[in-house]
Length: 431
Ligand code: CAP
Ligand code: MG
Image (cartoon, rainbow, N blue to C red):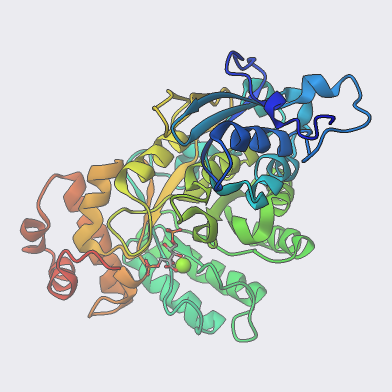
C-alpha cells in the first residue's frame, strides 16, 4: 500500500538551521500512541507545507519549504522554518503558521511555544519601536531611574471630568503617567474625546505647578479605523503616547497603529490584557516572552511584563527573561528557556511592572528588575487612606527610598504618606 503519511520527512536531526531561518522552541506532549518523532513531525509539517497525508502533486519548491524538527530533548523540540515560508513584515501570517493549526492537532496533547528566534533578515521587515528606551526617557525628561504610572481606580466608573481630576491629584503627588485601565475606552459617561481634552488641561496645570513633565497612557483600543482616529486626536491634544491592548486589538491592528504612530510620532504603550488566556498554562499556548518579542518586532515602546510579587501571574525568572529580552540588544541561548537573539537595529522596549503593586513592595521590583522600567500602581495609590495625592506621594517616596538604598521604615519616619501606606498594606503580596 502506498505510504499515506509523510510526517517523518519533517524531522532531520542532522539539520543545522540556516542563518535566515526562523527557529521556534516548543514544549510538546504527544497524544497516547503517538511517538515523539511523529508528534514533532506533525508540528513541523502542519506549521509549514504539510497535511495529514501524502499528496498526488508536489511542486519541486515544496522540498525547500519544509520546516524541520532538527533537535529533540525530552519534551522540547526545536523547529527551523525556511525564510521563503514567510511574508515579509506580516506577524498575522507568521502566527497562522507557527501558532495555527498545530495547536488543534489530536496527535499533540499539549503544545507551548516557548521562544521564537528571528534572523536579522526577518527583523529588517519591521520598524521596531519608534522611540525605544532612550527616546521615552527624552520624552519624559528622565535620564535615569524608573518612570511611574497610576491607573485611576475604580477601573471604570468615573466621568471624564472625575477621571481628569483624579489624574491631576496623582500627577501633583509626583506620578509621571496616568494610564487608562485596559477596559476603559470610550463609554457614555467617559467618552474618549472628552477624557483626552480634559486630561490635557489638567496635565498643563500639573506641569505648571510641579515643573515636571507629565503625560498619560490613553487607551485607543477599538476597531482599527477608530483606533487611527483616536491616535490622531491624541496627537492634536499634544499627547506623546497611545495605549493599545495589543492582544484584543490583534497583531494586524497593532501593526496598523504602529504605522500610524510613526507618522504621528506617538510612542506606543502595550497593555497585554487577555495574554493569560493562552500563556498561563505551563503546558500549552505560548509564553509571554514570545508575545513580548512579537510586540518588540512590531514596535511598541513599553509593554507590561509582570511583577512576580503582585497579584498576577509570572515568576521572577520568567519575568527576568522577558525584561532582558525587551531591554538587551543580544540574548544568549539559555537551555530550554531562551533561544539566542540578536535584535540588530530593533530598539529596546521599556518594561512596565504592574499588578497589585503598592509602596511596601516597590523596593522588591527595583531589586529584581532594576530601574530601567515603569512601575505602575493603581489600587496601591488610589487605595491610600489619605486619598490620591497622598497615595502618589507614598508611591514615589517608596521609589526614592529604594533608589537611595534606605529602608522604607527609615524613610517613613520623615515621610508621613509612606508611613500611612505601610500601616495599611505593610509588605503584603496581593493575590
Ligand atoms: C493594575 C492594572 C493593570 C495590571 C495588568 C489592573 O492595577 O491596572 O491592568 O497591572 O496586568 O487592572 O489590574 P493595580 P499586567 O495596580 O490596581 O493592580 O501588568 O500583569 O499586564
Ligand atoms: Mg488595568
